Length: 312
Image (cartoon, rainbow, N blue to C red; front, side, top):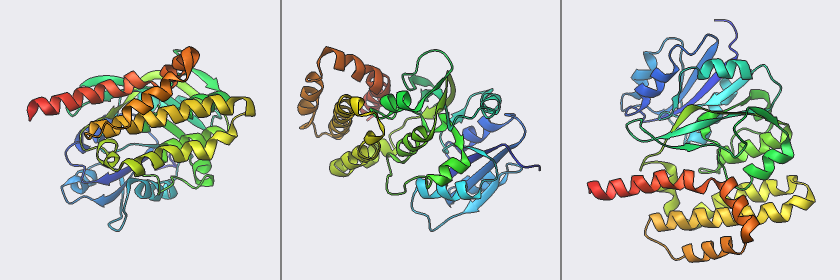
């Protein structure tokens, strides 16, 4: 095989339940795509599924402790100049490979597309995308940061980025179990413009076993995860933007932490978070709704919660 133009990084941990659909979504997506699966635990049959895919590289990492570490292993092993991440429960839509191939010709450090949110049966239950508008375009670093600092609205499989840029930035921060991808998007956005494609070309699965829902039981740890990217990257904004964006970001993080607590039956912080949002004023409310995409993100998860209760 000639040198690939794209490497797909796949961290694997007991992924047999959804992995067949993920692998099927990659079929026929074009030539020159390298697939690298780093298997932390494939004893449920997922490793055998990977072995059946022609050309897919498997790296066994039984001593690894996280998806971030697995992804960094794959990043270092990748041979292509462009990389993208695909978890064992997410999907490519038909034509995504061709869209990535076309996007790989530009000089942006980060390319992002929209994403469908899907449930356990692949049914679309929502949409996830940054508020960059309905038209494909190039977005300069200050504008990108003003929106992305408030809330991570980039679905993990919807981003493609240069391998050398990611390595130069140190890859994923392995201490950030929840916000490692957000932190990486911000680091890449700081280094140059990004390219935006509004079409939903991937699917991001939400389910009860996700890190969002299980890891957020530790309220203090979850808040720290949310606060770290903002603390690291707010200073990259022009001074005139820092106060406003900082208030929006802190309000967003407070609401995310409060909603996670409420999901686990701890609603004590919710009223305080809502009061913080109320203090933003009418213009702040508009910006908050736009940049957090709060309804698009939370309503599908609320429906999931209600469905689980109904089935119990």
